[in-house]
Length: 265
Image 1 (cartoon, rainbow, N blue to C red):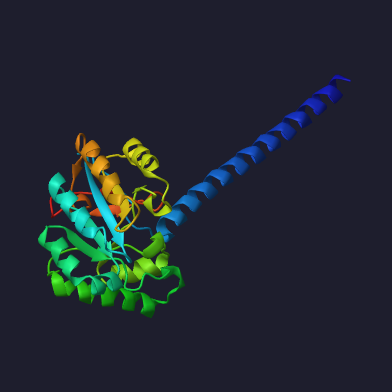
Image 2: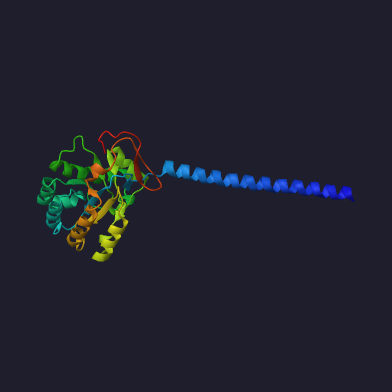
């Protein structure tokens, strides 16, 4: 009887050992699968710059435009009063329709960047169509400002992109830019909503998104800019992002510096 008990006990030990071995194998496989997923995700997914890793309280205000221009001069007056420089992303069709405003924007010390030509959905375009959209607007911009030795920035319409869009833009020498703090002005949610959203969520290195002809944009920015200036410094986007020796997290779009940046950003 004692022998039978010992044999039963030994068998139970063996079964338990097999059980825990299987558990360990399954757990290890799960961890390895997660690591492989993260590695593959990071290496294969291309993303624009959404935000910049900075601790100096610098932020940038970006203004997108494709249609409408009746608020642009009032915006320029506001930016002059507040002594800030702004980065505009315009579609080529807007630039063609508003040559005098383009000149005023540049004379005021602001910068204009590429927002495509006709403001299409870029995920629906092939490589040649993407190139055409970028080059047509680039040619228009270069009529007004010399881009030699300057960085080239592109923001896809609707914030829409895929690997082909980013690869193609980068081959043309562009850094692709998104935003980290969308004001939602395009939704017309009301002034109080936008004020609360921006002021409550602002962080160092943020890229703010507004639109050139959104409702009440002048009145809203007239309140927001002084509030943010208490703790943050507005700079043009080319002074916020890193131009050399950086990486972009494929999970978050955060651009962070690897080592010395030639532009001292």
